[in-house]
Image (cartoon, rainbow, N blue to C red; front, top):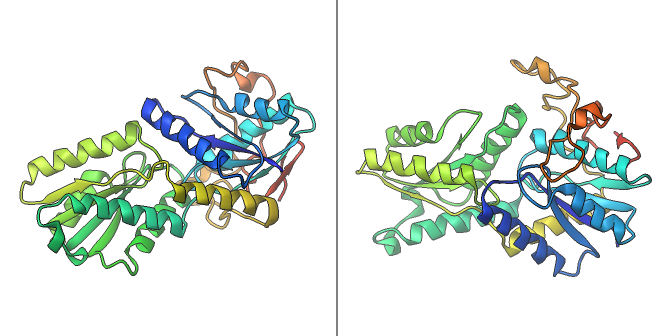
Length: 317
């Protein structure tokens, strides 16, 4: 069977790295995929090059590279394909099919719902707590890619539809507005008295910790509000199911990221500098390539992210 390399961004959080490793092991144990490795493009061990190298050493020459990201922002659109392009130079003849981002997806929305319910279960009089009186602040990472931020807004709407919450408002912890305090203030002015802050993150880390801290600070300044923070999605069966679904999709389907509103392809107001920008892999401290941009590893076409099959030096559209 075609090998699977699960590609994470990386985090300085040891707990986050452990959750990623646990998910890789969970997927490996399913038996629905022949060979699985996981690696990061920056910040954490093991680096992507070790994961790809291990699969190649076991005889794989064709892989599925699955970006473990929730939205199609710069990491999924450029950084990871560029890093995989570097691996193709290291391993001549290596080909890969590129999976699409995990979200939006009903499995993720159900997992978020479960995390929100778990947070509500700790409330006073939880047995009488009604979703109709609960507002949700869905907090994404935030990006300089407007398409990715729009995806978080879409997930907020999908989380609201049919679940009976008073409302779900999107926000971001970095790089985009509205911020966590701004979302909480908006909900307060809308009349919210019970708010669950739901981090739209796969694993724990520096930014999810920041969401907790900013929520606690706002709650301390507004003691009349019941503000609680849900857990991240985390290593779970639903996430493993989704990884395997994306793996099968990459092998058998024509998958395409949303290119109609991609700032790397389309002139978006305020983002003209992104159009056609060359994509280069991150420097990873455990990757011996060093300053990759001096060694011919930049691939100007890696923002052409609209296809499944990647053969030779870059994506085909």
